[in-house]
Image (cartoon, rainbow, N blue to C red):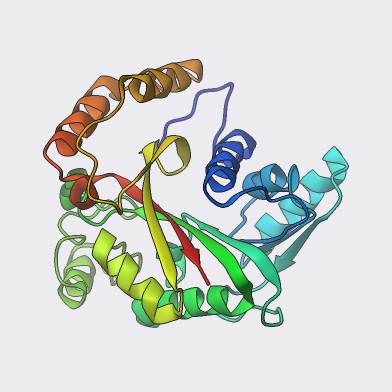
Length: 283
């Protein structure tokens, strides 16, 4: 997870990182002007606000009433029009088929089973199927999530901080988490290949996989992972990453992260070991 400083709060503001995501989307699929967007798991709405700078309408959905109320207050304070916050579950979207040009699920898919007395994997599949249903033909899903096989996740799950659960088979990891923490493993993340399989099952016809460097929550640089695994990072990309992160005083561990990226790209192992994935999946 990215660290904040007192002047720049990624998690409660979110607008600047939302702009980075918007730039990535428009670079890959074209302008979002006059498009209709659905932001699933919108939280306090920073990403929604960023996308509204380009889109005609943004519907922002979250299951938590307090977050939706906070987002509505924020919109009133900023006098922002054209964004419609709703409280609802992502597994059962209150929209007609073919309603949106883009659906955004950023750092949310892993949480859909949290606190529920159900297997989270079918719930994740249901969310993806619902996203596909409400998209127009030719519309895109933007999905961002951590990589199951990122090496540091072997020793500490990025959400619950439990060791080994990301590399164990899901049922085993759930039992192990229950033994360690007294509750099952409810926030599963996935590999490059597993994500593709899930999206195909949901009905998406074209799937484009990227990694956002250094983190999917703040993709300063995006690199496509589909056409063979890139074997190098361009020098100008590294300079751009370092400059951007230093701009917000996010320097802790940066040199180690960049070195790790250089190694996995050099060895052709980026698809296996990158920190996280960004997916653009076309209906």
